[in-house]
Image (tube, rainbow, N blue to C red; front, side, top):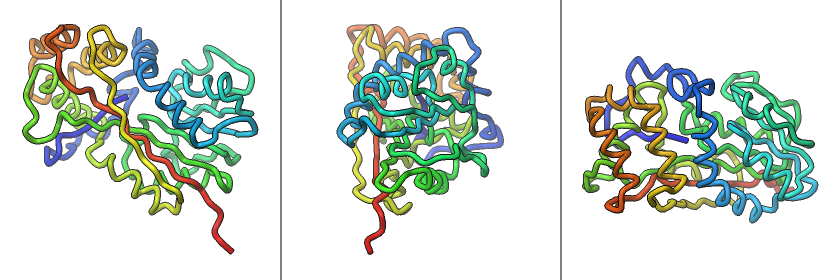
Length: 281
């Protein structure tokens, strides 16, 4: 999970040609799988409740894009009893480490012009993926073409109330703002227009579009607080390079997350969905 740029802030410079998993958060870094799982502990129940409400269940074939460690893919099989899940990621080491009947794994870049899993799906799901990628309208249109008639596309990405103008500056908000800018500068991550996602789904021809935002509480020792502390530490170079904060501020923000004085909002998750309804006769 990650990333957001301060509205009206600097646009990405030449360094924004980098990529998630290469310039920041490499999967071979010790503990990266654990960091991803902290995000999963925070958001998986929310994701599964939404997918269940949309009808996911027996008879469904599902595509999980940017599947990470595979927590959603495995829960679809174990809890919703879908027929199959194809889990796709640019690095599949966490997916292949724990095989499961019905779980297929594909190493691929979904931005490649020739990306095609070779079949169509009842569910296409992507969480914390599109915010790291350019050309979202084109990608959403491409993902729609992977749906069976009546299938549903579900995309989730980060939104952050802390970057709003006038928000109080605490150690937490200062480092969060620097993190979003640092990730934008290094790998092009940008969630400043994530609230446009419902409109992009409708523009792609999907019907019955809906959206919701969920913001987990920041509590000492919680999975989301631990996720942000670990994320800041791993992205520290990019954060400090913005010039907005220094190492001491990052350390103070990490300590603040585990303090009873912490009284801030976490970044949340916007989930948008739409149906590939057949055209009327």
